[in-house]
Image 1 (cartoon, rainbow, N blue to C red):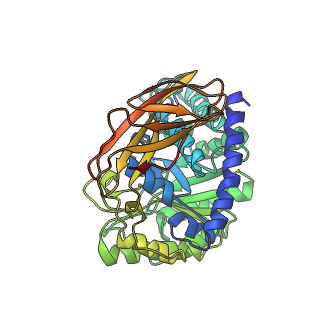
Image 2 (image 1 turned 90 degrees about the vertical axis):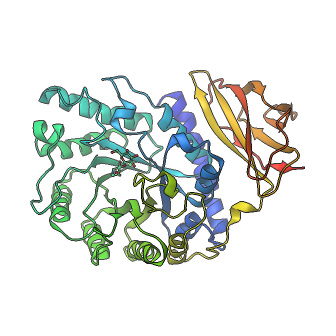
Image 3 (image 1 turned 60 degrees about the vertical axis):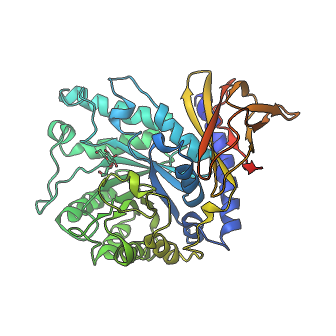
Length: 444
Ligand code: 9MR
């Protein structure tokens, strides 16, 4: 393993241990989605976009509520291998680093999919395409080895409708039915510890499409093709509501000897109707012992892929919706309806602005609470041997270890209620890929 990965894996192990303690500690309170789900032995995740991590309310909601993240687009083929053999992991790494530094797990999404393919893939002939597919899987899974709890190895390979047929794609059309099996075998070899999932939509109830996936999984299990889990995307709306046989469908897959996961949950609507549907999805998962966790497809309505809809648990201002309370209650949690985000005089949130081989620029956004702030103080803690080489828009002093800097405003101290400012710093990595942590923000 590359040194970077060793360090990251070591960090992940430490963080996992911390997360366990945190989960045990909060299990009594269970006043967040993640802690309530942990009390049921499940994770509660969300899709995340790297571009939003610097928004303090987004990061605060993410960090408070969720225990797993799925990069919404950053691990897809077009994002990670835009030219053949030219791999780029910057945005995906940003999400993985954020997740690890906040004790969250990561779902990998997705290795082989007909959509969001860079233009160089489709024209390849069969031999070349097979090589490219296997190389893509191997490179991604090796880069993130030991850091991904479950990978969507193949996504959306079946047609909608009653045929139960495979969907046309470069992989299907040139490599035939065997491409899925080959992708799973390659994936197992690349990271034997990751759970390998097949993921699809409109397979949530018993229907022709889910029957076709079911037959494939059954065949894989019978022949020893490595598959560990099936993801049910669960994108619901009035034309495609939560099916009455949702739980029964999850259970029949689980009975084949695979885990099942709710991977991209969102439900169009609002108010009580939306809340009831969300509660039913959670109850169905909890009723199936091999349903290991749920992921909603985004933190806030304002960034949902359903751009005109309101399908998520937090509204555009990060207020909890009735759907949130229904999910928390179904998970056995308490305290839904109170908004813990408003108590602090100010909040400070970290994001990585730019990265290169030996260093990076960090940015901390300081946001006033519901009252104006005259001045503020926060801390940034680095992991040795990293060193800060420059700070701007703020004044920093150091503790004796040289790892903790206390930061006060130089000119940007006073903030109106809800207003934000930021400061930045450059860090020499000195071989460590650790992500800084930001302490509590205090106001005066
Ligand atoms: O949410 C994703 C959106 O930002 C992208 O534009 C879109 C591109 O295809 O993909 C969305 O995510 C999809 C996921 O990767 C696979 N299942 C369906 C999701 C919603 O379209």
